[in-house]
Image (cartoon, rainbow, N blue to C red; front, top):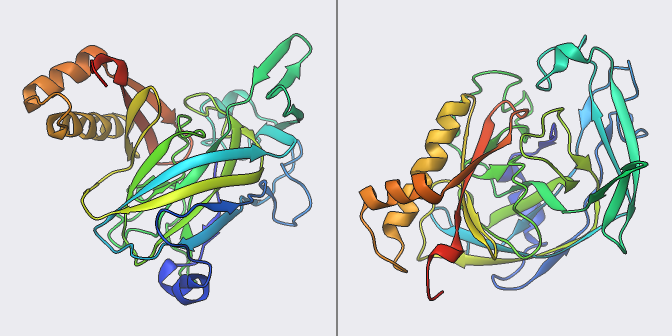
Length: 316
């Protein structure tokens, strides 16, 4: 979930540069929960229509990052706050928002208290959910060649502000639940300084995010370490954690998003040097062991991420 708007990075460059960091240094930030446009309620009440806003933190200027580089961003630590919620908007007013919007004409919201000692929350008596926090939105500065919107609200408004509703090559509202603490995200740089920002903080999300929202929360602290990679060229976001390499694709057409994610997986396998292979072999390996999952279907541009297990590479 993400309906936030940020100022164009070109306009924000000078004012935020003083918050910059040197590459390889760690940066900590706090994130806020989504709330109504009046700033009071964190989620819409049943049957009430409100403009939704989610807050992002950033941008962070990374010294030395230039367009054409790759930013390797290590997510070192995530410390949530103790409250969270999940909701769906009224399907009778928003018939296209959520996979089953027509079946749920009324809005629904529920709040949760998070037990950070156990890293759990109670969904209801008899159901306990383990917390797996990750940032739903993580991005660098906008791609100046991002295509126009095929559906939904415009990407840029009359004031030049950029919507973070849709994921794209710069990251943004990816909702990939593998981006937990200990993971590393690779993003192509489009603006000088990289301009990292994050938000739409989640404490748990199923693949698909089908009713619009995850277990929406906020972070007391998220600690990241950006590394400028002049030696690495990246077209679409990809990531890795202890168990998998993860390759992403985004498009309004879910089939096209799947195609992009598979292409990125095959291309990476054909380029890697751990066990050299042809592109034909990479395509076959992706079909045999690749696990392609629907990241989300609610952000207009749908997302797919394909995962390759690291355990198949012997001797790592």
